[in-house]
Image (tube, rainbow, N blue to C red; front, side):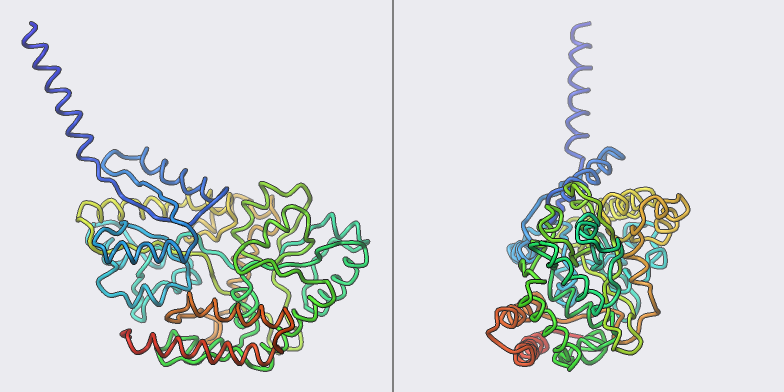
Length: 436
């Protein structure tokens, strides 16, 4: 019996070791921190528990620019992650990186996974598709900027608990909040995204020629128009009045809001997870204010956030694992939970309809603001999105110039003129090396 027992034990150990070795590890590089990082880990753990063939390993790689740069460097070194989360301004750069990426539509087809691009919200999917309608990356944390209000601060100032809808109303509200003793009246996250890109689409103004770059590489910026200059000047005036506190180029402003320091905030709809977790006051989520002197406003906002790109130089087994993970990620129940926990837009039509039918938007007023704002009106050539090469650096340029205006070092006209000039120089450099 002992030889037989030994044989059985050896066979079992061999089989167990073989099963462990057979599990394919899939690296997923991301840029999510805090409550959002916790949600990413939950998603990976949920997928890993749902099957045994693949193991998704989420790895935080720093900010969006840092993780994108790291993935490109890893690709050049011959060992990229299978999946990398890239923010929306990196879309044109990733699209032009032929060979460095494996398009999602091709990935899903090769793996035999069911995949219908029409299942995804058009305002989301359209951002990541080519001119032929092929989806190149998988939408993930899609957001749009929204307007947060500290209702307790409004009550303290004797204001009705109602967010201003126009910038004229906003100025009146800001003055009253300041007079009530509110140290920080208003701040904003992601200033170029909110106050240049989405200001443009919200007012049906071109960010650039050729449908904001979607129509081709020869695009040129148009963000020094009278309307753009007036808006940036308005923010500079707010800063002089003590109504606007500049907090930084990323999401630094969100902490100033949920700590109670600032009474009003414009930032990502995806900030709701951290605001809900940390705020000790009642707040509301509202549509962005608009300039009622601009005919037709408001139009529609555009998405931000990021999508998941599949890198080249990976094995067939890893690609099959990624395809199965993307199917899991698109599950209606998972997307409803992700949407409700984070404030990000559900990426599928079914998830949005599921949340609506379940009464989520009745229970949590404002939770549907992001989707309603994206779909406020049918998008135009000016408002359906943007696609600029080198735009990671391009957005930095715009924010440098805005900072100079806010600091009183330049006029709004000079700042935005310089943003256009410097931005166009970047576009021309990208055009010289990229393919349509």
